[in-house]
Amino acid sequence: MFDRTVRRLSAAQSAFMRRLSKRTQLIGSFATGAVVSGALLTFSMSSPAVGVAAPGTPAQAAAAAPFTAATRSRLDLLRNEAASGDEFSSRALSKALLDEFDLTGDSDDLYEAMVWVDRRRDLHGNQELAARIVDRYCGHRVVRWHLFCVLGE
Image (cartoon, rainbow, N blue to C red; front, top):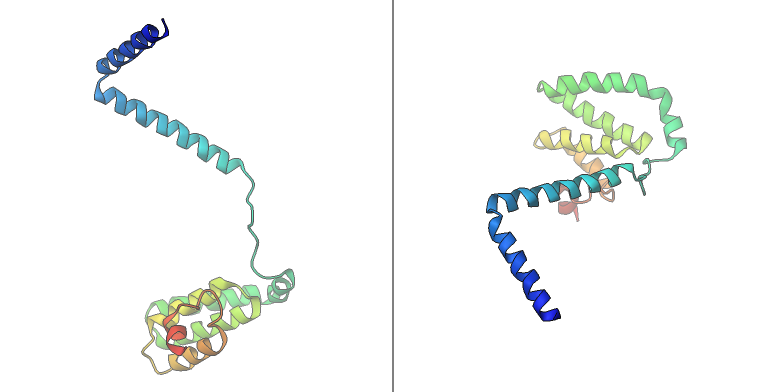
């Protein structure tokens, strides 16, 4: 009795699947994937962020607070001049960003300084910056695999 029921259900299912076109099966698969993806995104957006911490300590941020507005306007001016091709401004911007990193410990400043140093690596003035980078920053995660640090080992 059970065997006969299973055969009838199996035959009915295969007849139903033959009636469905490939296009209908594709649309159903896509719709199911979209619903599952939407549910996953909804759950992930409503969950709390875990393991996210601001870099640096509050003491470093408080120490750098008085210099922020004046320093940022000076850095913006140097960025504009360096972007236009001024080599002196590029070197001054790199030095200022490295000094800012020393003050605040913000990895973004170190990364941007490395970008500006890499743009004009062949200049004579950048050799002192390269020496400073190799001496002080090669242990940092931003610079660890940079060409200066790998060749300096």
